[in-house]
Each structure stands twice: as structure tokens, then as C-alpha cells.
Length: 324
Image (cartoon, rainbow, N blue to C red):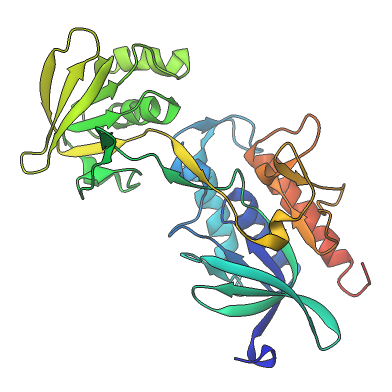
């Protein structure tokens, strides 16, 4: 396909978390053509993947609101615009800067299509991540019974026997979630250390919610046919067999670095993109917002990402017919 046949957008937004969604919404409000690219199959980023049921207390107009609800409302707001253009399951192969019809554009090569964009807004947050997998004797256990993310359709877990593996915030929070939302009372959490890596409030809730806790245990066997795991205590080697309906692994995430030269060449500070007051990076046509950026005393919150999105798109809108 020649460049003249490719779609041209004013803005390409990379990342479908809160900041990326709101950047698309503001662009739609200004009637600026835009495309939002999300690598995963659904929008939301870390608020959905890691802590969808965490309450937020600093979002305007809501004394408290779950992070998943914030994402839901941001998506609903975006969907009101007929010109909304969101693509999921997008893998960006490369981005090139080209001269086309006497103007500079970014040529995007993806697994779905090629297109041109005048501006880029990076809204990748802390980057893309892959879950740490369940391993036994350094061998990854592959099974359809192992879940690394949570289905937000709670009925999937109704009255099921659930085992959560892990000891960080996400593991402890999910274990509590199933009981506190009256989904099931049969929840066990297994952690290889003798102490959790989570807030005291959530740890205390495990006891309150009568969740079975197996601390200082390693997983030594996985039986797919019988839907069970064997755990062994790290000190006395005592073994137990635990049966499950749903096995949820929350061992954390492994960063999946961006391997696109034009983005890697941008000036960074403490591993994040360095920006000016208008969210511009070291490249005049590339902006960055939210957790992808760094400046002194920067709060990493959803509302900050949305404010960054407003600033970036506002600057592009006000300079729509002017030279930058």
C-alpha cells in the first residue's frame, strides 16, 4: 500500500490506560482525528490488570470509587463520540518518521494495519508487562486451569473453591475481594514467604474474611487431571494437597521493554520520558503523559494522567493550524 492510500490521523495515542482513554476523549471533543492503540485485548491498563477493586479517594466528584469503575466511566465517556477510534490487540512493529506531501509524519507499522500520524502521545504508563508464570523446579507449568488475570464477570467464580498464589498487594487484595463481594467463601492464599508484601489493612482483612492462609509454602506439584496442587512447608517439609476450582497466580509482572528506536531515542529521566510544561518530549511532535513521564514531585495517580492528557491534546488543538 502506498503512503497516499494510508489513513492519516492527527494524533496516534499509544496505550489504553486511563490517560490514553481520556486523551482520545479530549481529542474527540476537539474534533481532532485520532487513533488509540492498546496492546492488550481490553482497555484499562494497570487499574484493571492489577487492582480493579482498589478504592480511589482522590478522584473528583467521588468520595470513593473503585479504579475499575473509573475506567468504565472513562470508556463510556469516550464511546459517546461517534469518531472514537480505539484498536485493541495491536502490536506496534515499528514507527518511522517520513516526509510525505511536504509534511513530516510518523509511519506506524502494526500487526493490523499501517497508517500515518502527525503527532504521537505516549500513554504507556509503566510499560507493558507479562505476568510471572507458575514454575516448579524452574519449569513453567502450562495449563488452561491457571489464571494470571481475573475475569471481571464475577459469576465465573460464584461459590467456587479458589486458590490464590502470591503474597503481594494484588494477591492479598484478590483473595479478600472474592469474600467481601459475596462471590465465594472458599478462598485459600498460598505464599512462599512467612510474611506478606502488602498493606497491614489488607493483611488484617484476610483474618477477618476467614481466608485460609498457607504461609512459607512452596508449590511442588500440579495435578491438572484432579485440579489440585501439592504444597510443601519450607521448614518442616510437611506436604499438603489442595484442591481447587480456580487457580489464580499473582506473582507480579515482568517488564516488556519497548523496542522502537524513535521512542527509545527520546530524552529520559529516571527511566521515564522527560517532558516540558505542555507534555512535549525531546521530539517536538511526540508527547508523553501519565506514569510514562517524570518530573520532580510528580504524583502517579489516575487524575494526574487525565490532567496530562488534557494538557497535551489542548496544546495540539491550539496549535492545530500553526507551526510548532
